[in-house]
Image (cartoon, rainbow, N blue to C red):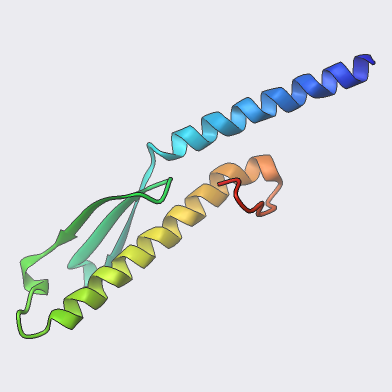
Length: 103
């Protein structure tokens, strides 16, 4: 019975550590860019877009599609980096296993 109590304490401690790490992801940010940096997107570890920056030289009224593509590429770059950040931070709890819905 003592081993079971000890194991439950360890599980509870690990859950608390995971929750803390997951909360901390919200305070971490990554930046995705496109067009050599003319468009940048800042995303937190919870994959929430915090800012989109577009330099004036990226704006061409005759080529709106290019700007749309640049924004989409920067968002995708930032989301990929946010996913990598989450996997790195949370991977220490899952042993590298990707557990759907965990983060």
